[in-house]
Image (cartoon, rainbow, N blue to C red; front, side):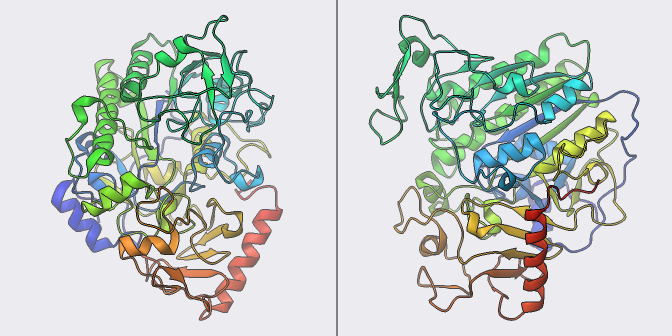
Length: 525
């Protein structure tokens, strides 16, 4: 079956397929790219907190995403793509290193005092492509730390950082748009910082969206640097930097990693996008994200590079049921479609994400794939494109999914996938149609009251109306099994925990998970 173009026909197709169903379907055919004489440019757009149901081509009706939907029509849309983690920092670690974040012991986000969590000697996407002759740039949210000291000294050169991991240049938001220091960093330095007005821990840092004294770690001073950071201009600023870099003369192929702050809270779209959606600032921020994607694609067209560029669009984790997400839900918008759970969770809504690839002449247009893929696979996939063989400890958990992008693999590329929610107790294994979660509940946020910023887990069912056999009246049942097993083929919404009914499958998956955790790698050699 060929993927329908967009709009109502595509939504009917998705509804007929069932969100997350893994049934057989043809994926389109294209000539493989291995051995291609001219390596493509690569543009990887990594959205923040964009859920499986936040995009029109994945079924959203309360927002309009014409540029992202157009990208899907021109390329291939994946229905079973995942982030290796349901949390921002470990997800980015997996993307850049090809390594499961549990191997680094990182389960949650880091903040402004934490040094670089990636070994500066480790192979990364940027280093791999730079060694293959690419120009490399990182623009946007970093969120992997800087330097080696704790706490980070923001007044000194911020190294090691992106440049030491293989990027030629970096410009962006160093942590996250909801947390200090609320400045931009370029290469090794805070933009606009002066020696006579340094950043000082313990002082208030404030923006329009995040006033001072909100219980965050504080770092103030640096008035000139802080003045350059305006919440409602961040998306535009990052777009301009990305488009400007694409427009520069490049005498070799390039890799652009554009990590947007859209649509992470606070929802601060530029004024032109405010009030344009049917679900408040949450949806307006999606509209700005779609515009950013369109501007990047237009820059490729302007330079005549569209046919020579692999564009990948995806998200770092599922949508978050914060206050803005709750308002969007009340307005009828389903952040993660019909999937159970939200950002931080072991349930599917935490880590199943939109994933679209376009590469004219290689990725067949207007096609849909149910191949199981993960962001951790990008390293091995780019190595295949670059003709580079990975070493033993390079991308140890990364599978080459290029055949799934360009054609129809004769058999599934991945027979398993490890997924990491916020709680290490809830580490999750996917094998074929089965998913095993090693503990009870969601493994993420557990706020109890509707309106709480951290609303999540069983309590969220009071708002969402979702159903799970372990939950009653917004609470875990006292006799709920100690762990979880779901058949995603028969039950994509994870309504029925089969832990007690299928002890044989539980034993098999538990043993497999323990084997992967103890081994140094999961990918084939």
